[in-house]
Image 1: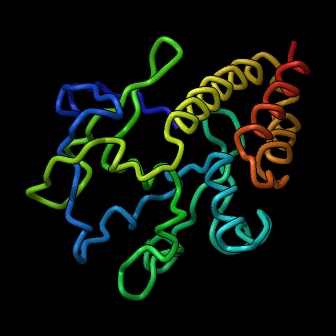
Image 2 (image 1 turned 180 degrees about the vertical axis):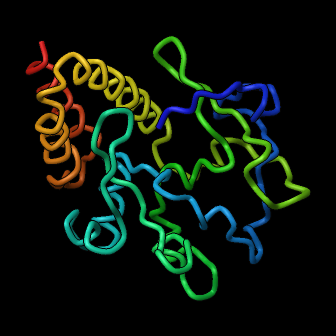
Length: 216
């Protein structure tokens, strides 16, 4: 989800690599779950998120869609996002103790928070969102430790390719508006609904390559 904001207004003015230290550690939250509430449809899920959730919860995409997710149009493309409970406004995965019930397999945006990604020149940097996390007196932590993501280099490469692919698809759909819904549903089926097996990155690369061929 693109944000048309001035980076100087929402960050500390720095860009970080995964080896840098950043003041993001909130001490395991300690009872705070503000970032799990009132997020609307902003927690957009990528294919790796769905792979983690379906594998970790032993369920299908359709099962998640029935209770924990919903579909919305994001920058012209239909994508899944975490669903907030209608009455409380809490994330559907927040438990009664105010803790994340899927923390080991939580989505990438949740792992990232309160960091964000700044994309440029076919890659990206991390930045610290200074107004988002409600916890005070945060301490420094290395970005790669904060992300808590295995095979981080592969993951960052995947995130980069997915981001710029979606950018290309947005442009393509704008040029072919009558095909927009059909294209979006095809992307959902190819990248979200079909299981990846044990080797996510290889399967993703193969699917991405095949879709790009069809676009040429």
